Length: 183
Image (cartoon, rainbow, N blue to C red; front, side, top):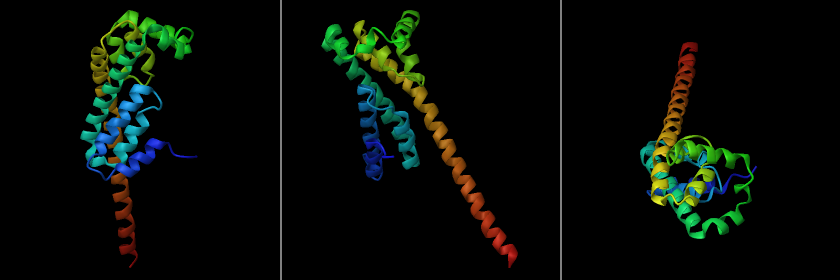
């Protein structure tokens, strides 16, 4: 199985000073196009450079918010007809009906809620953009939601990395200790 292109980018860039910026740009592309999910990118980025997690977290949150704002602006610029013509799922998918219900019940907060959950954010973003919600409002809502979501994933990834390090140290000591006992 071939690794995704973003994985190759992360491997190539992990030693660069601009590595967090590269991760942030991957977040912009992911959030602005929905071409790939960003969570695997974030987890891999943290695993490849665990000491840089605070800056990676910040660039990921800001990148996702920027991508969402750009997508919202594009939707508003293209308008209802042009955008809907390229997205056949808008009027038919069950998820679209759930999106409309979520927006009806929570208004602009629906974007922050969706951004914080492990669900696609594009339907809510598109619906809010078509309803003429400001792209800055959408970006701010995504910023809040991603702070929560990415924060949880980063902390979880850091906890797993720490656990693996402790286990490796314990296993390393156990082997050297048993060898000393046999002499």
